[in-house]
Image (cartoon, rainbow, N blue to C red):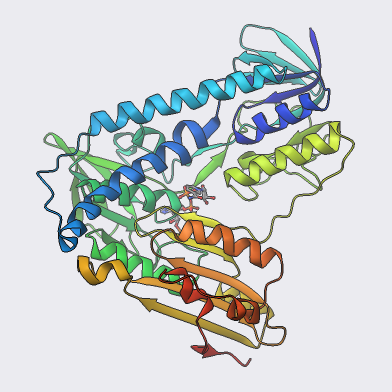
Length: 454
Ligand code: NDP
């Protein structure tokens, strides 16, 4: 039995950060990872996805170049080159994660880990690790979705990153972050893409006007949305596949991609046997600072199904390590979370949606604008930028920012800082424009489009 102050199960964003910070505070730390260091974000999520988003954006750049006097030669996209380069970068990052952990003095175990008892972790080869504190940071995996005939013929986001060639005809199920980002990558690289969603609009939980604007933009690039529909079956049809929807309609495809949410990785870890309470979705229940129902067992990141975003897992892992090993109790604010959806055009948001704001602020002013970006004047591209600020008239505080257009994710990051500082609309107005930019719209929206009086 090897003894540690901290045994971390899971080497993704949250687990790695917690391990490194705890080791920096002088703790003797073990980290156990069964697959690849870096977790979903680095290995089969944010990082490889963003590289593919970059790849997918060149096609429009080539088209737009004509209006600026460029003659662009025959362009040809090679999936195999992109995949090889992407996988090489992911492998490089994985090795950086490994060397950083080792440099911090963390002992690494490449194995699956199961709790044998509340302080003891058993590895696949029978090795036992005893931890004064245990951190569960096992993340989440793609949700399988409803069991339908032929489900095994489809892939999820993990399968997407293993595709050896660009599919010609893709049917995507779901309309959340993952479904839309991957649908957009495939469409922009040249696939025919249909998105089947059970609801009446994409991106549930986002601001309604942003949802409508983005779905129009994505429809304009040829993504076909089938609203209010679900999959009934998937079958082989000659060399390809066929999806049958609940209304009997059929869609041909050579790739069927499911992106219907994610499930916390808690099965078979011995958590409940050790007394760790899970919620109905199988997520680890945590209170206060990531503490589970067993006081020396903590959990951070997607396995807790709070805010399933990499920066939040990192922050939770860091706060846990500072609190337990650094004598600096640190909370994590789970509100005011900037985020982006890396479709093209991309969406960037922070703060309340209009519907959320109206529940708390009866005197809400909405400042909204849509406009053709300057680049489109010569390129002729039809895409329009959308920007929206929500302001509490009583205090002048800016409550929410929602945008669709180039670099909206970058904007959400900086507008997020201003909202943290409690920025008022007057402060936006007093800020001089950077001209000519799209972002200057944010400081030049003088007249409210809607003035709510509830
Ligand atoms: P989301 O929760 O964002 O979306 C799930 C989608 O699947 C929704 O459209 C939902 O529909 C649909 N769905 C759920 N269950 C069913 C069902 N039984 N039948 C049909 N459709 C169904 O999950 P994702 O998997 O896209 O992403 C998981 C999380 O990962 C995100 O919430 C986000 O936190 C994170 N993420 C963040 C990214 C970023 O920051 N850029 C990128 C990728 C992921 P409905 O709307 O009707 O519920």
